[in-house]
Image 1 (tube, rainbow, N blue to C red):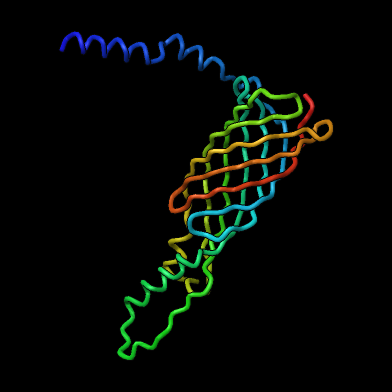
Image 2 (cartoon, helix red, strand yellow):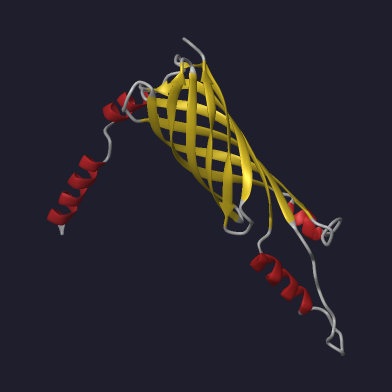
Length: 213
């Protein structure tokens, strides 16, 4: 038992980063490379586990490198979608369960219920070495969603209030920037997000103008 414990401690100690390694890693991060480096716009399609697929748009601001090959971006993205047929059907079925009608010939049709979503994001993108005018990347980021529900059947009710929420999100992204002419890049961004009550995936393309340093 003592020998096993000693071997386990030795293995864990070797696996954990040493203070010197951790310090060297953190020293790579610096504010010196942060400056306004580019502004871009993107348009595409967004799908989710609860809403219909809808157009979406975003604005991205590249704020430079925070570490070697790691750049910092801020963004705003927007979309508005209707709840899918399965979601509406389930909602109507729950309403039928609380209606008392001896004849049983009533109908419930809540119509369209929509959800508008504005997300503010902060991303760290790791730039993969490839070519001077072709810049692929992988990204990890956080987001804050401001959501607003709407629909004739829920207007002014607690259901609408329940849909009007603020939620945090975790985002993963991958994409590429391709130089067209000096300072102007075509962009492609593929993104997946997880937040309270909603999972999304989007594909957007656009343009980014990069400022000469």
